[in-house]
Length: 463
Ligand code: TRP
Image (tube, rainbow, N blue to C red):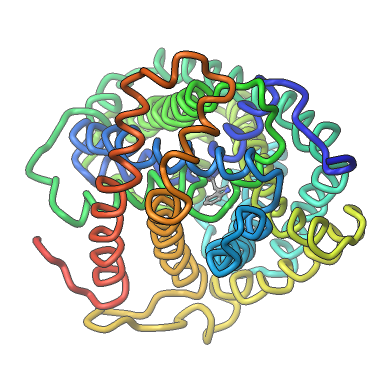
C-alpha cells in the first residue's frame, strides 16, 4: 500500500522491534524482579515463558500484521472478523494507558541525565521531593513526549527505523562499556552472586505470575505493537527467525543490565547486600550515590552516561507505544501522519497528568486506590501499571485464541511459510499449531485470572 511505509530490511525491523522491547522494563524493572524472585531460578522461569508462551504470541502478532498490512484494529477487519477488532481497540487503549505513565518515568531518566552531568548526586536522596516537583518533571515529560512524537511523525523508515538503527547499537555499546567497568570494581562478584545465585525457596506462584507479566511487558506483547510493526515487514522476511532475534535481544539486554547494576551496588555498599533497596527506587534513589562514591568527575561522567542510556532505551519504546494509535488514526481516519501524531501525543500527555502529579504532588493521585485486602493505597501510576499488565495478558490470550480458533492455524501457517522455505515440514510448525490452540490459550487464560486476583484482590493462590 502506497504511503503507509515499510521497514527497509530485516535488520531494520529487528532493531525497531527490539527497540520497542528493550526499555525501562529491562533496565529499570528486570534486575530487581530477578533479585526478588530468587535469582537464577526466576531467570529460568522467565526464559521458559519467553520461549514457550511469548514466542507463539509474537509470531502470531507479526503474521497478522504482515498478512493484512494494517494497524491493530484494521488488521482484524481486513481478515474479515470485524467483531474481533475489539482486541485492537483494547490494544490502543492499553497503549495510551502505558505511554501516559511510561513517559513520566522516561522524563525522570532524562532529568537525571542533566542532574548527573552537573554532579548533583543528592537527587537520589531527595528522590521523593524530586518527583513531587512537577514543575521540573513536567517539563521533562513534555520534552520526552516531543522527542517521541518527532520520531513517529517522520514515519516508519525515516523515523522509527532510523532512530532504532542509531539508538540500539549505541545502547549496546554503552551497556557493555558500563558492564565492563562495573565488573572491575571491588566486591563486584558479591553483586553478581546476589543477582544470580538461585534461591528456589523464593519461587512461588506470585513470582511466577510476576515472571509472566514481566515477559509480556518486556517483549511488548498483547497490545498490537507487534501487529503494527509486523504490518511494515516485507514478505521476504522469515517471521520465525525474526522473532527469535528480537526475543534474544530483549532477554540478553535485560540480563546484562542486571549484571551491570549489582556490582555497582555492591561496590557502593562495600559488599554488604543486606539492606539493598529494591524495586523502582533502586535506580533513581540508590544509583546516584553509587556514582557519587566513584568521585565527582568519574561519577558524573558515568552517571550521566547511564541515565542517557536509560533515556535512549525508553525512547525506542515510547515510539512504539505511540505508533499503535497513530497508525490506527492514519489508516482508518485518513489523517496525515504529522497531524495524527501531534493530536495523539497531546491527548496521551494530558492522560499522563494524573501520573505526573501522583508522585507526591497531589495527595489524591499519590494514594489513589486501596485494593481489596491490601495494606495501603497505591498511587495512580502503579494502578495503571497493574491495569496494563492485565490488559496485555488478556490481549495475548485473545490474539492466540483468535488465531487458533477463528482465523485458523492453517491461515496462520500459510503466512508464516512466506519467507521461510522449510516451514511446511518443520517442528516449529507443529509447535506453533499446538501453542495457538492449546498451550497458550489454556496457560494464558489461567494466568490472566491469577494475575487479576493477585493484583487487585489480594488473593495469593499459593504463598
Ligand atoms: N517493552 C517495553 C519495556 O520493556 C515497554 C513497551 C513498549 C511495551 N511497547 C510496549 C509494553 C507495548 C507493552 C506493550 O520497557
